[in-house]
Image 1 (cartoon, rainbow, N blue to C red):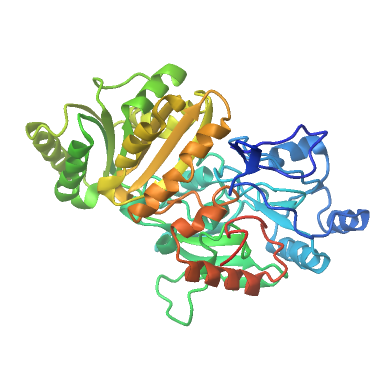
Image 2 (cartoon, rainbow, N blue to C red):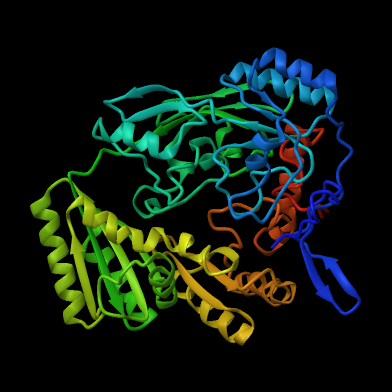
Length: 500
């Protein structure tokens, strides 16, 4: 999506180009001109090395991975990577950078998909990777408090040993950090059951742009004293402050887990199956995911994953989680019997053992991996009224005709979240011009959101008006100016270049 000149010719600027008759012109996703931040000096490096002995990295080879996003679509030119271990060190860094007008790019696991986690120019990369300690866990309330750099999968393993689980689960769980999850308000596979991080995060510790530490690290489920400030930072993508610690409410580990993989002939049947599952599975329904036949083709072609059932236009992954295997099994049996009798599903299989459960989940979780082998991918993370989510895929295929290699759809039916992916053999400015702004205009027409769970980052910041009123965006700008008046925190991200 983004074009980078060869390294020796690059002038610290990343551009996203579209083609027109008189030559290329930057698209709304292009990086704006570099803002007048200071540049790193030897004196700056000396300060960082003093407070972070051995953890102020300037080796270009070690910096490479911090300058490039997971999709390899955005590349910055930072010359410094800072790896603090404590909140106090983060505070000292930001206090100094604010006084020197040095821009800072907060970075967790760097698994983002919208260019929000890597520098655009030469911003200092502040990594939370070494802030990976679990601080406390209350086995009665299920409240976990940890540093922001804890990897999601590590937290999950820690909790499972204590009969609890994390309230969110993502395909990138082996790399993503809880601080980054909160900063982007990540959704994931369990949102249907446990809700968003706006509800499960009880408290945050955040370092503001000037180095002040905001201690809202509450472990109370009810606290109605004044404004709920932590909500400002959930989903703010590191533009208002750097999250250094999180307290989160964790559910008990279910004693009974079942996963069902079903096939449907039409998306209408899939939606009716969803309605049926909510009515008949009720409190044990924990996930309802879907993928289309194009996704299955990619899984088979590129990852050699075999379809566990007969070929169908649509596939569903349903997970149930409960406390009584007999009760849950009976409810699931009754649901499947009704779904088959009603001809809503044409085939299916059930897994109750861990290895088989993981196998069925891989059919959904590894679609993103399969897409990386298909060529260059244009990715869109859209939320829509549930009945509309696949119509966008159908309309996009009709709109693009043979200009795209493939147009695939998968996602979270339970919360109306579609992951639309469009592939081509290589980056194709003409194809991008055909996709955008069509995809955003279509989404706005049906009152959807152009970013359901990935955030806006660099790539989508200027499209925010398709989902938010100008008054709301203007107020966001006011909040940014109040908390970060110099604009040093994750510049060029989330907010549009020209606030209305």
